[in-house]
Image (cartoon, rainbow, N blue to C red; front, side, top):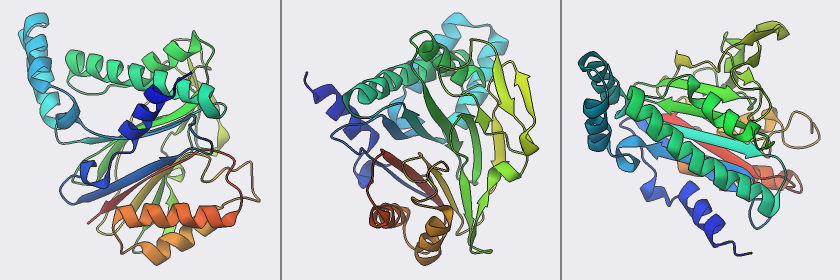
Length: 289
C-alpha cells in the first residue's frame, strides 16, 4: 500500500510556519507528530478565506434560499471570514489504519464545513453530529475538538470527548482549566453515540442527555495569555507516570514571552525528554499579542 495520500494529508495538516493563517493580534502555531511513520492524530489550522470560496457560497445561497435566509447567511459569512478554525482529532490505534481514519476525517470535515457554510454561513452545533454519524455507521471511534478564534480573543468551540483546553494566564503565571468555568467539553466520542442523542457530562460529574453537541463561546484572552489544545499523546490522565500538566506549566512559564511557534517546539522537546513516546502528539498554541 502506498502512503502517498497519507503523506499528502500530513503535509496539509502541518503547513510550513509561513503558511499558518494568523489573525491580527493573534499568533498561532501547531504540530502533529506521529509515533510511527503515520498516525491517527489530526491537527489543522484553517483560515476560511484562504480555503473556502465565499463568492460561490453566496451564489449558492442566492440560488437556493429565501431573501430573509440569504440576509442571515450574508451576515454570518461576514463574521466567519474573520475567524480562524483550530481542529484536533485523535482516532483509535496507531500506524496506517489510524492514518486512514484521519484521512477519512479530513474528507468529511471539508465536506461538512462546505455544507454548513452554504446553508448557514457559519458552523452550527449540528456540525459534529454530522461527522459523528458518519463514523458511527462505520464503527470508527475517536475524539475531536473544533474551535474558532477571532482577533478579539473570542473562542467558540465544540468537543466530542476530547481533552479539555487550557489557558495559561500571563497575569497569574499559571494554567487554568476552562472546564471549571461552566464550559461543557466532555461530550461523547465521535462514532460512539447513536445519531441525534448525546450523553453530556456537566460540571461536578452530573450526566445528562442532550439532543446535539453544544457550542461554547468565551472571551478569554488578555494580552500575553496562551490557549492550548492537544491530544492525549501530550498529556494522558490515564498515564500519570508520563508528561503532566505541572511539567507543561513550567515550560509555559519559561517560554510565555516567545512566539507561538517556539512555544510549540519547546513543549514537544520537553515532552520528548520525559520518556518514550508511544502515542501520536498534537498540540496547537494560540497567543494573544
